[in-house]
Amino acid sequence: MTLVGNMPRFFVDSVSGNTISIRGNDAYHIGRSLRMRIGDIITVCADRVEYRAKILSISDKEVVCDVLSAEKSENEPTVNVVLYQALPKSDKMDLIVQKAVELGVYKIVPVITARCVSRPAKSGYEKRVERYNKIALEAAKQSGRGYVPEVTNFISFEECLGELKECDESFMCYEKGGVSLSKTGIAPVSEGEEKTIGLFIGCEGGFESHEAESCSQAGVTVVSLGPRILRCETAPLAALSVIMSLTGNM
Amino acid sequence: MTLVGNMPRFFVDSVSGNTISIRGNDAYHIGRSLRMRIGDIITVCADRVEYRAKILSISDKEVVCDVLSAEKSENEPTVNVVLYQALPKSDKMDLIVQKAVELGVYKIVPVITARCVSRPAKSGYEKRVERYNKIALEAAKQSGRGYVPEVTNFISFEECLGELKECDESFMCYEKGGVSLSKTGIAPVSEGEEKTIGLFIGCEGGFESHEAESCSQAGVTVVSLGPRILRCETAPLAALSVIMSLTGNM
View (cartoon, rainbow over the protein chains, first blue to last red):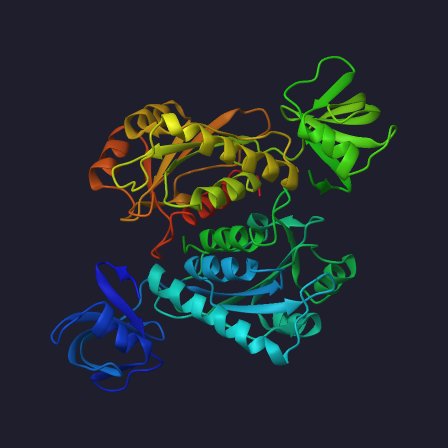
């Protein structure tokens, strides 16, 4: 929870009818930490719609609200950027998730590439995915998103390539060069165009040349982020910022 | 020290003639940690020039090298972006300094604005400035810069306004709105144009409206980074990325 425009913001999965039910930690938080009262107004978001809602009842387990008004969130970008991030070491992914959500990412997909030092077992990875999704939720609240981007379980390079092919446009940031993002023809995207851009970023060691070749052959545009070497947690934030600017979302 | 193009990179203040002297920690590091030997080749940078140099002698206190070739660094942006950053709380400035240097900043100037919670005494601040400059040096080595951006002591809002007026172009990122950076007419800057752009970013609480007005009256363009609320450490990185892209440096 955070204050955006001085009004607490919460996310629920869906809203049907004129009543909203907030459960779990958020319910407890509304009553205990925020000490809100019946009649107080909050903002509840569900799938890019922002509801202004009045609190009807409060318990530690559930807060029930009455919908006063509903509006499409104006804070969501007009483009769905999916970040395919080669898994970095230590807790760098935490920073990437938090910042990517602030910058308007649609979904984050960790990828295991040739140079990943971090190669967790899929079975034990659920806990990390859970943590990443908590970070995404907090960042969505803090930055005023109308949608909570999902962080998925990790996928292989081949699976990533398959998903990138499905995107309307896709880019791989390659440290050994490529075209500048601003020269790729990324253009402003209007509301309702439903465009998906895939963005593939390497881990600490970057990409193997055969990975860049595979991407290129699959129709993924290989781009450069300039001559300075960006750390693997800086590159996605720089690329996302530039894409949001080029598409008219920043 | 880090490996860029597989060659260790060091910075010295200046080079005169054909001999380079590396002193202090770097000298010790070359001989002991890196175990380099006489005849090994290193890259030494001084003020945007990269020297390829051969080691002539090694001691714990000094490494002397012979200049083999000198070239203007190709990694420096064509534009000098000075980041005026309202001082944030805790260690957020560390992250800002590291990432801003990677992204090509020219200089970083901490500023005390109306909403700064962190208001250190000028007398005790030298140690923090020293740490920031160490972070800048390490980031410059890691990212392959040809120049180490300076982090200065902090200045007042009024002093900042005075400096912004001296810039060729200047921007204040205001959370309550303004024009998009991509709509301000920032254009590609050619090599040798010597353009300076001032970028003013708020702390956690953003700016007071009278600060935005003062900036506007002083000719500083008030810009928005989009509808999502960026944390104070995310905003400078997003704005720098977009400016580097618009000026043809990313």
